[in-house]
Image (tube, rainbow, N blue to C red; front, side):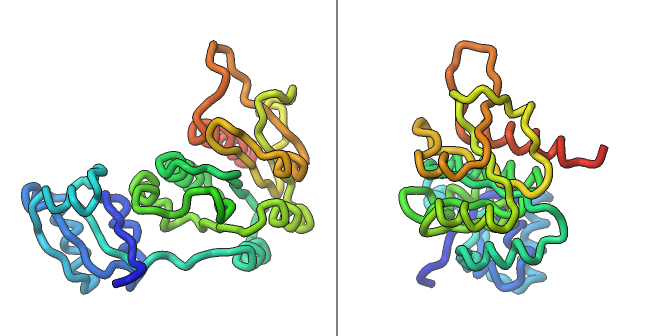
Length: 247
């Protein structure tokens, strides 16, 4: 069906299967009918989802060579979220907002890894610009290992305007930049917070920097000058989580 997406990987397929009606059909590796795959087949059967056992080569073709762990599913994509959904989310939160903003990440593996870290850290939503940035592709969903189905992913047409809206709603905007003097570990990351990380190699755009309340850097002792954006995201999110957990 037009507009459907492919999800591959055991965790990813199991995750999307938790939402009734999302999975339209699935294919499983007939060469590895182990307990895990048989369990997934039983879940598909219980949910009334058509599925077939096929040769591994067919799964490789569907997954475009990505690692699929013996499971591929065709799914109805999650609802596209935009600025209005983000405002509704902020109103409905029962705890201080914890948001991740990605300023133009284009590599699907990086985005998938960022979503996975966001899910693990308890982030309420991941925000990214709609243009010149990666969306929720099949590769992103696979790398995210189910997090693309559990963490709201909000694509906005104007990131600067969205950051202004967040500030107007009491959310503090903290961006990462290597040249600033303030360490990530010295910054106050409690309360309503949006952590902003820049694109691969380029970092934060000028206008994005101007909308940050504070810039921080990840202290580094070695010879490398920067970290992969997904690594930097994980470090930043879990420092924020450390500070936000009850003492």
